[in-house]
Length: 417
Image 1 (cartoon, rainbow, N blue to C red):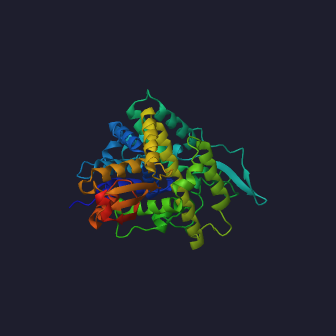
Image 2 (spheres, helix red, strand yellow):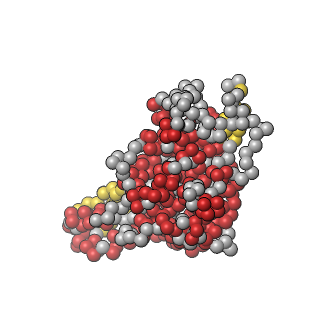
Image 3 (spheres, rainbow, N blue to C red):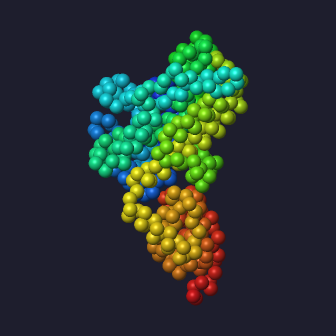
């Protein structure tokens, strides 16, 4: 039996990603978690459109090769392609593939440094130091325009989408929005890349910068067990991030398309929280700092995923989908069901109702469905216990359902109605 483990299948590409860690924002895991959370927020229509576009990528980009031809469901393979696409901008850094690297790698697109220093206990912008004209913020606006352009080719949109997924994650890593100026680093510390945590004289893999410490904070805080595959490792972490920072509490912060605000948020975090007096050059941060870093990272990764998911829903939505959503809402009201405001709640209500309605041995059951933050609650009556078990199993197998709450009552009387 073939295990769903694309990390091993693409071990070669993993080597590429880990070969140049000093310039990355979130490492491989961080970017994939952002994309996973974004995918969870996206409608079926948006997912289908995103997958179709990624498969249309130029052949020399190697982007579409990540779509596996195996026995798993199309939905699973599309999500896998989407999450790996979020790391593509780092994969193309590898200079061993000269043509691909020269065409697609752009180091300045991964960050936008706001230069600052501490003066009399306050944060002070350093106006004489300027960021590069080509930067993360400028590119996000440009690629957003490409994705919304009906005249743009799917090949161009594929590259734009891969960059949006990546840069959208990058600027939520606070050190990609910051360059701290000190007497030791008068031109900025390059987002913490010049702030070394390893002892003087450390070489190779023993060298650790503050930037890489933050990039790899997920793996430092939740290590992989037994070299676990992404499919075994990432979902549980993503679900925990979404539990701690649920969509309903983050919707007011989405600010779709306001990329400048996203960048400024990251800068505020970097300048006010990432350089406490307890952080010392040449010393590994304390456990308290590590805990703080992971807390910030979880919120930032979740927020990035929600923002990108909502943005892609908006870009790939159309009048037909809006009409369908309105129709679904009317049906929900007619049945007296309760459906939350989560991105997938109305869709899951429709899917679970359809699944229950088409199950042969549930036709005489009277089951109502409520959905809140992708958690389905089953209410009503069934004739026998086997029907209750079948109903729960049917909903659990519905893609996108996080959990099922059972409030069903077994009542033989319902059979006589």
